[in-house]
Image 1 (cartoon, one colour):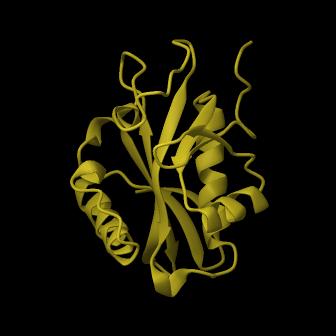
Image 2: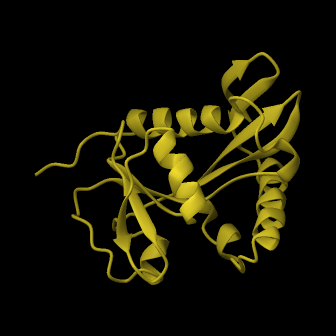
Amino acid sequence: METLLRREQAEVCLLKTEKEIASLLTIFQQVADELSWQPGDYLHSIPNHSLHFAGLLDGTLTGGIQLVLQNEEGYLPCQKVWSELKFRPDEKLGHVTIMALAPEFRGCPGLFWSICVELSRYCVAQKINAIILECTPPMLKLYRRIGWPLRVIGELRKMYLSRRGLHPAKS
């Protein structure tokens, strides 16, 4: 794993090995079960285009973010679900498939925010124009509170797009 941020007992890392990623995917599956979300094998299905940002507290994995990048043709797997989503070919996007902390770590000061900051830094460094994510209404309020101006772009289930802090799309 590559440490991106270290602050007191908290760390944010980019996971590199299959074993590290499998540990985070286990937490993601536990959260999915808790929320009655049934991702099937989706979280495991795109390893060549997925990045995993993890939060650690005193060395313990707490949760993180899975970011899926476009394939060589500019396609994101979420477009299978939201077929109405159309993007310009020159637009570089990422899809946050899940952002989750294990229940016992929710509310830890700065942990969730630090993971989001490192995701944003990565996107800026890689010139990713926007991130796409699906979220519940309570999480939408949280994301907006931390400064992500999300707007609805898909209706099957609410899908949101954020361009804040990322490179603006070309007109």
